Length: 218
Image (cartoon, rainbow, N blue to C red):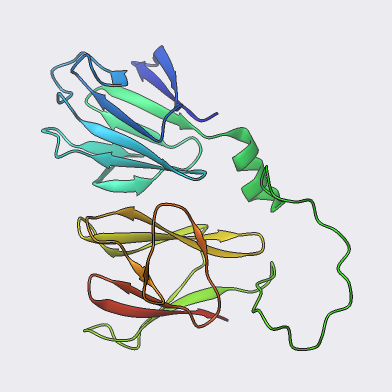
C-alpha cells in the first residue's frame, strides 16, 4: 500500500498509509495527515488516488507545495518523490507491486494471466496495442490544431487545469484514459469520461474544454 513518510531535519516523525481515494494534508486536526506548523496551511494539499496513480494537489496554500524542489499545483507522484512544505519533507513511497509492474511490464494484480494466443485473422476487428506500439494525441481544432503529442511517458495529462483534465496512462497492452481534475467531464466519442479508466482505441475522439483531439497508434 502506498504511503507518505513525513520528516524534518532528516528525522522521520510519522508514516501515513494512503488508505482512501482522497486524503487531505494540513495544520488543522481534522486532516488525514496533520502537520502542526505555522508554515503549513489549515488545508494545505489533497492526495487523490486514481487507480494505481496518486496525484498531489495544492489547495491554494499560503506557502505553496513543492515536489523535488519545484513548485506545483497538481502533479502525479512517482515512487520516492519528495514533497516539501516549509521545513518538512514528505517522501512518497508507492505500492511496491505497482512499481514492479511498471518496471517489468508484467500484468497488474487482478488482471487475467497471459495464455497462449490462438491463431487470429490477419486483420483483427478490434484494434490492439502491443508493447512495441506507441500512441499520440492529435489536436483537431483551436490554436494548436495539427499538433501531435507523443504519449512517451507512463502518464500524460491533457486539458485545462481547473476546467477539464484527463490522464492517459500507458499500460503493457494498451492505453487508458480517466478524468482526474476539473468540473467538466472530458468526452470520449461523445460520452463522458469518469474517474474509472477507459481503454482507448485507435481513432478515438476526445474533447476537453472545447478542444477536440484524436488518439492514434503510431
